[in-house]
Image (cartoon, rainbow, N blue to C red; front, side, top):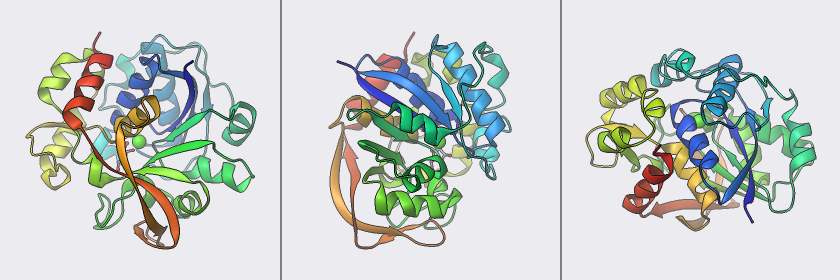
Length: 284
Ligand code: BDR
Ligand code: CA
């Protein structure tokens, strides 16, 4: 039986790869996308989620518009969040399904539902504050002693530090941090072999990473860091990532710091094997 999966997302180029990976993996049944501000503002992340589903032939998947905030990574993902190529994706005739992610989680979480949160954690924290419990929550975010927004803060946690703190303290998440994802580069060969519509979204992001080589810990020269797809892979095939419990908290800047909250952190993976898995699933 396929595992029900909801993705909370701010597409975003690596979000697009993560959503496509889930949509093309029979191990999971994509039950919905909840959108949040992040890489760009909420109108664009929501529009991008809808168009990506239309491209993937999955207009059956509901899109729920979540919380707004200051969108902040146009230099990484392009002004439209998808490398200036969002309008190359087809329109989705369905439009948004609703505007209340907390209600959507309340109505749709079953005891075996996985939620992968791959943007700022505003929707997830609001649900926790409303008393919702996530049976299994996987979060892409944070860095142990490293950051990509400040020296110590990663973008998703930095964008809503209070929400990140709520999730670390009360959400019982698996955290997939930069320390792992900055080693997972989808190189130019990978991008040449997968769905060309997805590869076509990556230009701005590739150029950004070429200018910021300190964010690429892979040893490979060029490509994109597929942060969010690494986290979603753990939802698709649990055990893909090696986990270890750390005592953690979040400071006011949104940095992961040592603390008393016991949190599972993804520390390692067999990247060549995971890269091959993604390449196979994302080929058309
Ligand atoms: C995270 O921030 C965003 O820019 C990416 O989509 C990813 O979720 C990486 O720090
Ligand atoms: Ca993201």
